[in-house]
Image: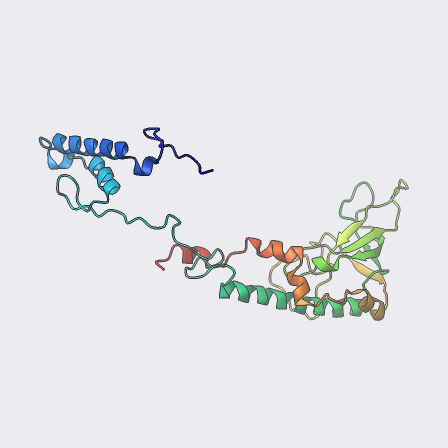
Length: 270
């Protein structure tokens, strides 16, 4: 059954306000009254507001008083379509060349990073079964300079990317506190890739271990595992770009991603 249309101006059936003849007539009356009111007014005080409304309504290029009217041309009502990634026109996010290139660069970066990390872990003997010492993240009443013993029991491989700050190694506490209670377990980050050059960004703490005083978790591997066991623990598809692209982390990362030039493009004349 077809929906009955009611006008929000005259409340009659069969049309809406946009096509209402009564509303059009009302705008005309206001425009004519404005023209009459302008007769005895100085030019600076003459109004054209009502005439403009009426001219727009009937799509006229002149006001009732004869003044040329450059009315705004009506479009499709959807505005200028822009790519949601780069803000340029002529394409969308799915077909944006810059967006496709950025995703490919990201995927290549993830694979390169993971290959470096695999070498780093093998070289350090760091994997499931390794023993490490470090200061707990939350010190209480005991000696804050004391390093506690932890066992690596889990690796969250899928969270490891070159741009993430994920703590992916689960370290299970083996020491007891002075009161006999167990120390908390902690997730710690991967070490810095062994061939990673010095990073000038001092905030890049997530991918490296450090013995400096400004790093709150001093980590040292004191019990290693074999390179073979580390290699066997790495998922077979860890370096597969297609698997990375289907991951929840990848989808979330690029869901709202925008080009660095997005706003420049948005406000450009293009």
